[in-house]
Length: 253
Image (cartoon, rainbow, N blue to C red; front, side, top):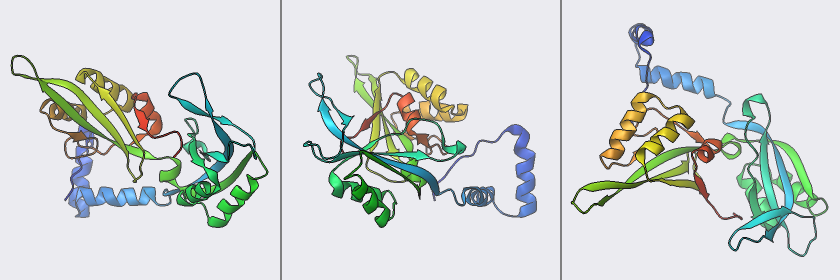
């Protein structure tokens, strides 16, 4: 059975012991029941779906191609940028991230996969034949609108001239917590730098940081929320960028 660790303040220990004794069920069962109650109805969120025409525009850089806003009917073809803007104070924060698709069929497939009703997706595609952009309000799965990620750490060691092992780098991989193909990655060549960035960005508890350091120094792979590092931790895309991670994804998906 998977294990998760909860860090409890010392002053709260009597409360936990009282709950265990009086209610007659395990703390893990109580906590799971609490989470089910608190997260009921949170699986979906109201959001604005924005779709705009765009077209690839080559700039002076020999490798990078960035999208530019265009108008319907251009010879470049029908390429689109899709963005989600969650409704409500609780969902604000961070710029809308564009998802790029090519052609009307791919747009329909992307919108339906995101959870939009077929008739609404068809209407948006039809409107974009006459308009430069279209926006509608819809209720979509939270994982689509505000995806969360888990972090996995892989230490890479090499042997030095004296036969000892030295840490070459730590590979960090971010994968969608709710499934998905897009991933984020970064390489840290100094362990202290990685731990400092994690502590400043994610505000992880000291026991979790200690466990992560110990695992990486011993050559073990580790995952935030996994067997080694203890408490569950999911990361937003904004936090991934703050960590200096880069998305492994082509311009058009």
